[in-house]
Amino acid sequence: MRQWYESLFEDYALTYDQENFTQGTFGECGFIESECGFNKQTKILDIGCGTGRHSIELTKRGYNVTGIDLSDSQLKRANEKALNEKLTIDFQKHDARNLPFNEEFDMAIMLCEGAFSLMETDEMNFRILKGAANALKANGKLIFTTLNGLFPLFHSVKDFFDSNKKEGSAEYGNNSFDLMTFRDFNITTVKDDAGNDKVLNCNERYYVPSEITWLLSSLGFKQIDIFGAKLGAFSRNDKLTTEDYEMLVIAQK
Image (cartoon, rainbow, N blue to C red; front, top):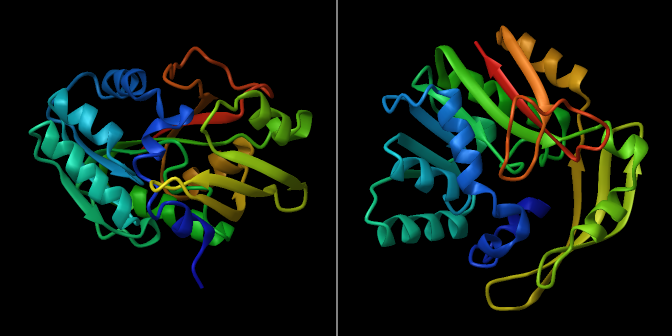
């Protein structure tokens, strides 16, 4: 059975690059650079790379990046963008739940819910984290964003999306947050690259910090820090609060 996230990213590459939630690439890559000490020898795995926005920007800055994604449409766009920039980037098609890498990378990134939290079961989400952990060398670092489970306890998810909507962006409706599973069920409408409306029944998993800490500790990460995630302006100075829709997780083996 085809899942909603597979349907979402089919023929949704050009439009995706115009969404407001993809506009923080430059600043986010600056933070990633600071986290690897600006060491150009850092080998980076971009999980759920989409149209390659982080992979391309980091490659332009001199880093060795491998980008993986499940969507042919997104990878096609990523390769086109890299070619236009005259960059050589290793984009590969993989399911993040079954990554083939073993202790090959110094850093792994997974941003804008690139894969984690989109899966239909908690077990599948855990497999993504496990694959990322396996891909990292000793002392490797994982940086990812995920939905903050503290947010819907104090706010309406629907009101958040309504307040951040701009013309032409994805629309979210009929939200229902399940307190037993911490999943938000909603109907999302996006325009594909041909301008046609695509209506999807979606559900995404929100995580509270203690869950993330336990999951990563069980995978051998020794240092785990969690902060609020601000679009395009990641910082270790942003303490996670109930006002943050997303959290920024930095974990080191």
